Length: 431
Length: 137
Image 1 (cartoon, rainbow over the protein chains, first blue to last red):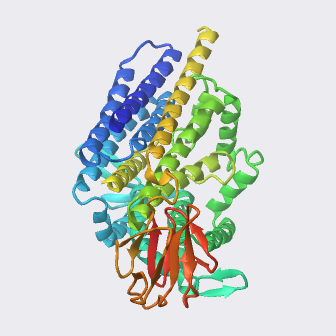
Image 2 (image 1 turned 135 degrees about the horizontal axis):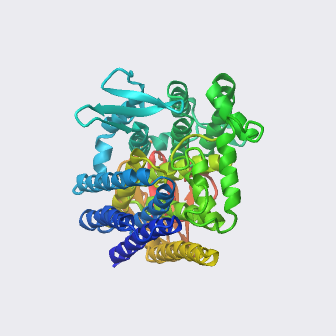
Image 3 (image 1 turned 90 degrees about the vertical axis):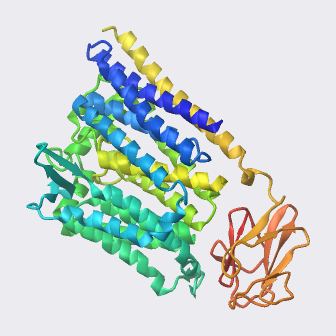
């Protein structure tokens, strides 16, 4: 019954993507194009495949996670297609690959469920760390790191026989590995971390050694900032650590300590590293730095402002003027062409995703599954928050993808894997 | 191209987006409604030992209450050197699940916070006695 509802939503989301492509073609003066059918077929195949896999291997899972993911992917895809149809056809392939990966995740967990992840947690942690470090491989190696827009977070490997270069962002996979590791680690250690040993007036302080994990998190985040010059991944990893510690122990102390460390770290980084300093400068006074560090933020603001209440209509704005409009700034492109109404739809979809994800965590069977579901939901929510806050100028811009919506295969693959894991956790709650 | 027509398409598309989200939100509500923990508190609630000596043991809560402790004379005996002989009492009063620390040495923690007065807990909360953790289900 609930699975039928899911199938209906998936077909509806696929139709939305196809209608968006049709509207783009129409406003560009072309009549019905093969692209519309190819898009429809890709979405139905990708999410339909995931749906069938869920029916087979996680039939009790929440029927609402896949539809929300499909909805966000559809809106993102429409904007990507509208800005650059070439990229959109690559993104369609990425969607097929990501869905295949999600199906493989469900298949791997078919018998023993997510408990397997707990057993191999140190292997998973090692994979995560190796993936984080991969971009530092020297440029001369066949598989090597690459610096794009000043951040070293790409890995490329050449396929000479095909004359193509494959590139991916291993950090996207690493974040999933680290969330899994933290969930299993905290499921065992949280008790000792939650007990307050000393009191200072009315404030209960944890033991000094429970500060260790926070300092490790801060150190790792800083290392990423220095060696890969990637503000977004650094902030995401640190935030994930702090929020998972808070979820596991229910102690606001971790939030406060994390917040203070983030502010102090940010202040130091802004003064020491020029690439961070420029981001802050472009955030505080973008119009004063219109020609350089503020250009992207200002173009984003112009785009969102011109979108007004209902937007220019798909294909009728100029989102191509925003730097990185298909990746980091896709939200500004949506706000320009679909207006405030469309942006609220996107934000609502993310809010619903968080509601469903935390709902899975609340109803999960044991602490590991609770922390896993909560951690994976936090990854998606925090990443969306970091980049949306950057686009909306609540925070400095930190280059990071908007989950499900931005162009990018690694990001889509990691987020579909998260969806598969969440569905599996919610299936295990019922059986 | 007629502007009116383009505007119409735009508004229709936005309407479709919201219809989709509205349907999802409705399904979430009915999905949550079928979940037993959304039902009235105090009926059929139980405490489950989720860590410590007897993992998975269940205590069905009732109005007369149960005393949990290390002593063999406690109604629920836990093998935990950090627990007191008669550590805490759990029971149902006025449809609410109450935890009452019985002056234990190491204290009783609800969701990680030490409680000395009788405290209301709800489903999903954790109660820690010594090193043993119980969850209200």
